[in-house]
Figure 1 (cartoon, rainbow, N blue to C red):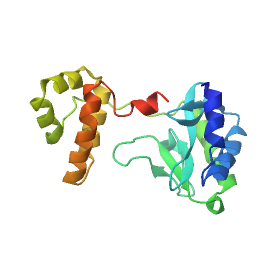
Figure 2 (cartoon, rainbow, N blue to C red):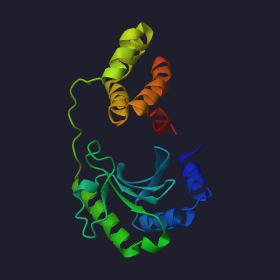
Figure 3 (tube, helix red, strand yellow):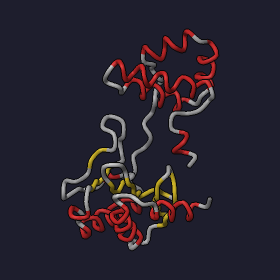
Amino acid sequence: MEKSDRVAAYFEKEGPFKEGIAILRDLVRATGLKETYKWCFPVYTLGGENVVGVVAHTNHFGIWFFNGVFLSDPLGVLENAQEGKTRAMRHWKFTSLDNMDRQGITAYVQEAIANARKGLKLSPAKYTKTTLPTELKVSLAANAATKKAFEALPPYKQRDYAEYIETAKKDATRKRRLQKILPMIERGIGLNDKYRNC
């Protein structure tokens, strides 16, 4: 399926936020950004650089600013995508059409475009060797084939798995996540491959 078809399908899909994401799409496209499809949602770019994305989730919809860390955020609406993990991305979330400030949204997108034109973006963090959580380390030590498959993964995929276990607060959640990922590791699949390949 072509990217344009995937974008069209995304906005045509029935759901509680169908109208909301259509409004966001119109506002973003009015700024002249190029529409494409990455990570299973519509993304808008300038000169090949990601500027914003429009997304619908189960409980909210919104706009992602890929380098939102540089936005002035005069309305105080932006949230870190994943506190402690995401450095640059910021979200503006909505739960209904009533709390959408269309002028404000346009102003934020225009500021994001201006920042992109200035070349403002965070450099990727320099990562050291991934530290494995105890549960993952023990499981890999107990199975040579799984360990070999894990070591064959690129460092960023190893890091994804380690963080997936590490960020679980409860022991039961950590165990459940571990059982989920071990077969994926054995097949050489990255935790987030389904988002990268959609």
